[in-house]
Image: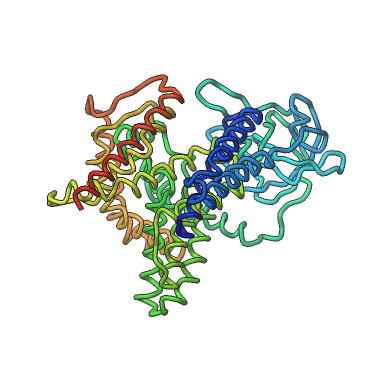
Length: 488
C-alpha cells in the first residue's frame, strides 16, 4: 500500500477513535479492541494479514491513540478544578480571556487563569455581567457569586457545548470588582478594537437588518442577527452566509492573493507569507470558530502545496486538518456544531461535486454553483434534520442566485470598512452599491422563506436516523463511484 494512503487511513481511524471515545463508555471500547485483536489473531496466518500487515497495525494503533487522546482531555474533579465548586457560593479571581460577548440584556465574559485563595484552578467560568458593564479583554476581576452547572435539555446539551471550550460553570447575579485593568494593549486587544470600530461603522451607516448581515458576513459577528433574519436565511437554505466558513476564507484568501501578486507585484512564494498573516488575522478577527479555523488551515495547506509545487489531494488535506484540530481539542467532534457542519459540508463537496458537475454539464448557467450546493447539502442533511429539523428544497437555486455576488459584497464590504476608518467621505461612495446588494439578498431570502412548501419541518429526527442516513449517503457514493468506473 502506498505510504500516502496508509497515512490517510491512520488519520481516518484516529478520528474514529476520538468518536468512539466521545460516544462509548471505556469498557465498550475495550471490548471492541479485544474483538478486533481476536479477529486479527485468527487472520494472522492468512494471506490477507500478510498483505495488509502495516495497514492492520496502523488501524489498531491510531484507533487506540484517538481514544486515549480524547480520554486524556478530561481532568479529574478535585479542588484544583472549577467543576468541584459547582452549586457553591465562592469568591474567585480570573482574567477576561476572550472578546466580551454582548447579548440582548447582558454581557458574557469568559474568565480563565482562575485563582481561589491564591491557588490556581483549572477550567474556565462563563460570567454574565450587566449590559452596561465596561470590562475588556485581559481585565483581572474578583467575583463573588453562586456557581451553577451548565444546563442540559433534550434538544441541546449546553454543558457539553461549553465543556469543549473548557468552560465548566456559569456565574450570574454576581458581585464584580475590577482588580486590574488591561493597560498593555497587546496585539489581540488591537484586533478586538479594530473589530469594534468596524462594527460601529456598519451600525452607524446601515439600517437593520443590513448592518447585522454585513457584521456576520464580514466580521463573524452574529450577536445582533435577529430571529427573523435567521429564519429567512434558514428556510431559504442560505444560513451558511451568516457564519464564517470555507467559502468566506477562500474568497478572502484569493482577494489577498490577487492584491499582493497582481497589484503589489510580489512574487508568489514571498506573497504566501503575507497571505498567511492576513488569514491568521482574519480568523482571529472573526472569533476563531471551528469552521473558520478548519477553512483557514485547509486554505493554507492548499497555498503551501502550490507554493512548493506539490500535488494537491483534497481528501488528504481535509483529514489532515481534522486530525490536527482534534489532536488540539478532541471535544469539538461531539460538541461543536460548527466543526460538525463544516467538515460534513466539505466532505460532501469533495465526494459528490464531480458527479453533480458531470450530471449538470449541459446546464447553460450556474452548473458549478448548483453542483457545489447540492454536494454540500447532501453532506450536512442528516445533521440539519437532527439539529434543526429543517429541510429546504429551494436551497440549491438560492445558492446559484446569490453565491456569484458574494465576492462583490465582500470586496465592497471590506473596502467600506477600510475607507470608513480613514475617511467617511470615501465610505459614502461605496455605501449605495453595498446597500443595494445586501438589501436584494435579504429581500430575496425573505420572499422565498414565505413561499409555502419550499421548506419542511421534521420534528424529533433521532441520532439513529442520522446514522442510518449517513450510511445511505455512503452507499450512494459507492454506487455512483462504481458507475463512473464502469463508464470509464
